Image (cartoon, rainbow, N blue to C red; front, side):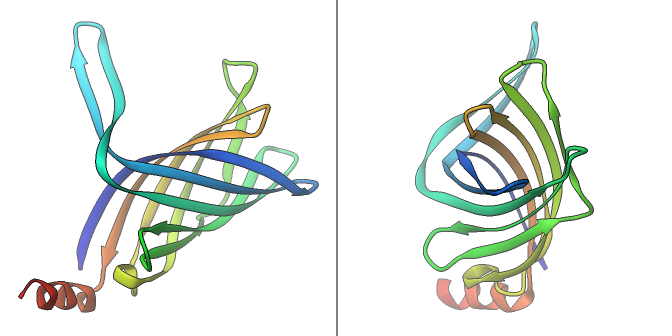
Length: 158
């Protein structure tokens, strides 16, 4: 099993499909995450990198207590995608900014397609949701590819 680790910042919006049910469509460009420790503490930012965009489409069911279930699909280029769902329940609550809610979730990969066929792994999601429906969702994922994909990649290189 070969792990792939990624960090991406998705942006987009959610819309209510029914009371307590949201649908989101987010995109994230290829990027480099830079974390710097300096005199003023820690700073972090995403810098543009060459490459394409990832797209995340999801459904979220929100309970009155702020907990939620989420499932969706992330596509990484043509024909390469993973499907995920929350492990347990995520949570969302007001933040220090009165116009933003802050949420977190741990998700597991249910299945994949293309390069990710047979994949497994986990994704952490740390996000902001504005009162206008705009979303910034920071993902940190570790995806394990099964041996079939390793063999296929070696054949493609030869």
